[in-house]
Length: 279
Image 1 (tube, rainbow, N blue to C red):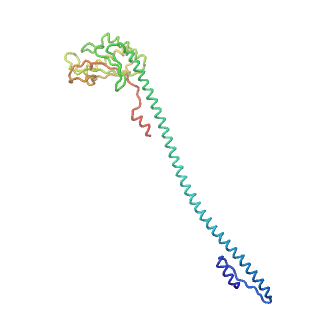
Image 2 (image 1 turned 90 degrees about the vertical axis):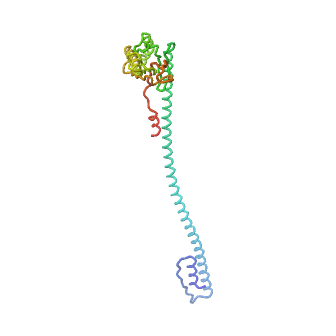
C-alpha cells in the first residue's frame, strides 16, 4: 500500500486530517528501502492504535455527558420533591399547632365546666341543709338553675299578698341569712298561681296576685338588708304550673307558690364556646 493510501485509511478510521508525505528513496539501497517501509508501517500501526483509544475516549465522554444530564435531571426532580415535602411539613406543623391549641381550649373548658359543676353541687348541698326540716320549703334544680320553692300556705293567707309573721321568721332563718353570707348573689323572685279566677279580692287577676306576692317577698328581704339591686321579681300567674291542671281554670294548690331562683353567674353562651374551636 502506498503512503497516500495509508493516510487515507487513517483519515477514514480516526477521523483526523493527515497530510500524505513522500520520502525520496533515490540513491537508497533496497535494504534501506525495506527498513524505511517497516518503520512507516510501524508508525502507522501505532497511529491506528491511538485512534482506537480516541474512539473509546469519545464513547466514554458521551456516556459521561449522558450520565451528567441524567444526574442534573434527577437533582432538579429531587429539589422539586424536597420543596413539596417542606411545604407539607409546614402545613402539618400548622395543623399540629392548631390541634394543640384546640386541645388546650378544650381542657380549659372541661376544667371550667368541672368547677361549675362542683360549685353547683356545693350550692345545692348548702341550700338543702338550709331548708331541711322546714315544711313547705324545698331546694330544687331547674332548667334555669338552682331555686328555692316555697309553698303558698307558709307565706300568705288565702287570697292575700302580705307575708304572715311566721313567713317572715322563716325568711329570716333561710334567705336573709343566705344572702348575707353570699354578698353580691343575684336572685329572681317568681310568683305563681293556679288558673282559678279571682272572685273576691282587690287583685285584678292571677298575674296581679302573683306579682304582688313576689314583690312582698322582695320588700321584706330588702328591709332586712338584702341589696335591692340584687333582686328582681316576675309574676308568672298560672303560666308555669308545677302540676298540669285538668282544665285551665281548675284549682290546683300545688301551683300556688313563690320560687327564688339563685341566678347563676353570667358565662359564655354555647355559641361563644363553640366559636373558640372554629377560629
